[in-house]
Amino acid sequence: MFSLKHTPGRTAIINEKEYLFFSGYAYLGLNHDPAFIKLIQKGIDLYGAVFPSSRISNTSLDIYAITEKKLSSLTQIPNTILLPSGFTAGKAAVGTIEEGSSIFHAPFCHPAIRIGINSNLSFSNWASETLRTINNTVYLTPPVILSDSVNQLTAEVYDFSFLQEIQQKIICIIDDSHGIGLIGKNGAGISSQLPLKENIEYLITYSLSKALNIPAGAISCSNKNTAEKIRKSSWYTSVTPPSPAFLYAFCNATEIYQLQREKLNIQKESLQELIENNPDICFQKDLPVFILSEALDEDHFSKSDIIISSFAYPNPSGKKINRIVLNALHSKEDLQILTNAL
Image 1: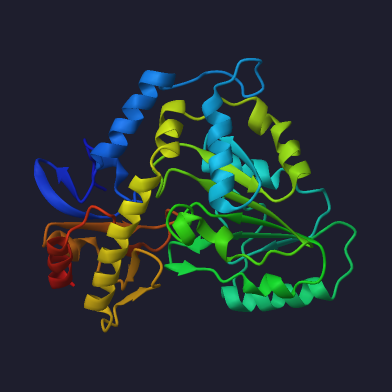
Image 2 (image 1 turned 45 degrees about the horizontal axis):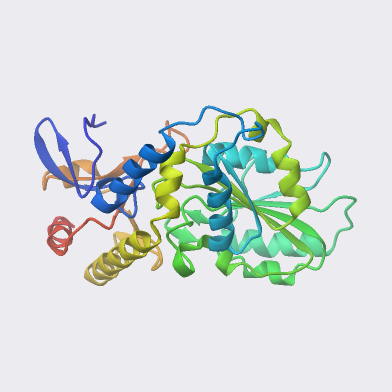
């Protein structure tokens, strides 16, 4: 394990030596973007770094409602609730599930939304089985589907088109932490790829800390009553809200986000072309994540002064997963060095 004294960008300094850094989840590289940092600083001047008050207090900063409106506009889902973290958002979302409801866990559900055991099927097989089961069963309460939008451990964006064929009323809770700000139109995340049907209620939960670089979480709900239920829960009423300074930056960084996504997409497509015939690497064209074979581990790359992502997750005692993760700060020269190491 490497101990870092500074936040990495395209490189990381370890024991006063510089390494190329292909790890982490700061996909858009905003920790080192001067324009974005200036927005945070301006937000601190306007709002301070922290606002230690309940959202249901009789005094509330306007930036919270402004941010919720902007997130609803981004996701095209009308009712958004800000929370301190993506984990809190996930727990608040599953907290709305009625007792006795039938739950369908996808193959990968983050612990934030997992309340049972993940399926051991492939996503496509699980989707087919879930579709068949729901359409052929009578339920007293709407069944609930739980899934992540992206499996960052296998570099897969899940295909939810099977929901179009579901005939019963259902509730679908999707953790979009690795999709929001990165995939979809203007970084809308998985919501731009979901079928919109009257019988499907969506709760899209997400951390804003990955691509968007905001220490906060949120839930975008298609049902207003569900949103109001969350606003009355302790997940919302009893927690300190996110930093208003960062929310100010989010609300004023639309052009910065777009520019960084464009930079990342160029580098991502370049690397995909460079390694497309390498059998030891797999990737999905929409993601800046590349899954490596066991032979291509951190020791292999350290010889070329490169750090990759290499750790066991979600079980820390399991087998390590080796990945290359690009961010928008990487250069063509960085990719060539990486390709040479591969």
